[in-house]
Length: 178
Image (cartoon, rainbow, N blue to C red; front, top):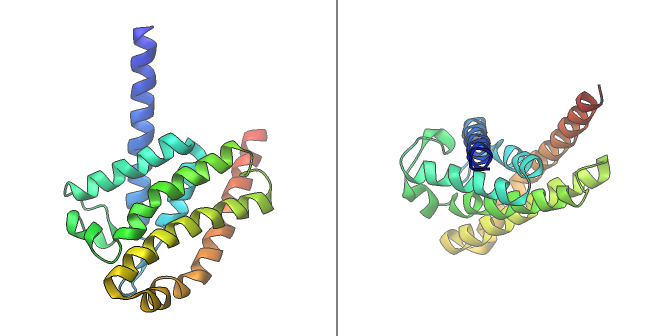
């Protein structure tokens, strides 16, 4: 019993570490924009939530944030430190936690099966992280400006990431059947 519990804990820890590394790698795939860069992080965060479920998905994102605050260069542009969370991207980064949890919960309810439901899952996750990000950015630069620079320019990329996420889920379902 103790060996099995230790094995389960080790498996979960390795999954969380692997997921946090995937999020860190996706942070470096970016379109430089100011004050918030467009990255592939949201796609990976939502995929982690869908694959891991709400608790492990959220814990994985939290691990990623702790790694960055502790000084590991995991944030976009290989940045690190607590100042990143206090800056313009902080709300988006914190928003990854509830976004991953929501995507994981929706997946557990069957919302990651089928194209339309998968699209809804990705869009709901993005809505949560945008809400967190815009509120925080609005406190720093004003709400109207936050929407103008932290939301509207990201809509086309969000649509592409949602489509890519749906395609990845469909491909993975196909691989599992084979």
